[in-house]
Length: 233
Image: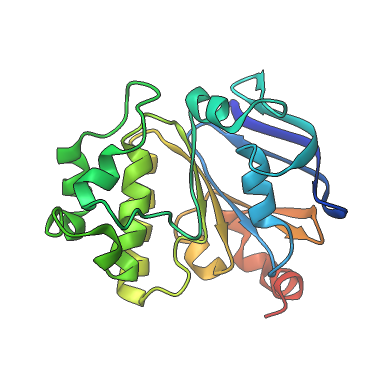
């Protein structure tokens, strides 16, 4: 498998606060890979650094062989990376369909509205509803659906299951497995490693701004004691 995303010696700062300390990992084309770790481990900062949304970052980030660490966020997005942030970013003044249509198309291969509504029947029923009038689970589905339309091939999903009911978590899991079948590559930030185990190929564990371990999903059970120590559960 070829690496779609390569991160090497990534450091990031917010002001004087040094958050990432030499983060290194790869995501292969067609994989679902998770970043696991406690709160404050640096997972979301890693995601934002990949998208160029951190004020200062140094190191190497290569997407399909192209160095992106010095690119503006809009150029990174146009290269084919899309992020679904933890806060979702649903626009209150727009209905569901308008929210879906807002991001620009960066490449061919994105899902059509019909395909999106087949994948997310919940939001099809709410197509003319104001975006922020949706339930938390429906808003999360809308946020994921919105980036599927753009044609981006690497999707960054930040805590997509946080605070959601189990039935919605299961639906999001089915969605991630389906988009993997369609050829998308996913980098997923999660604290719920039991959910991550249902969708991911590999797991990178972060602690204090560094990657401390990589565990293939097939070896997760055998490493459960170590994982509990890492995550403090």
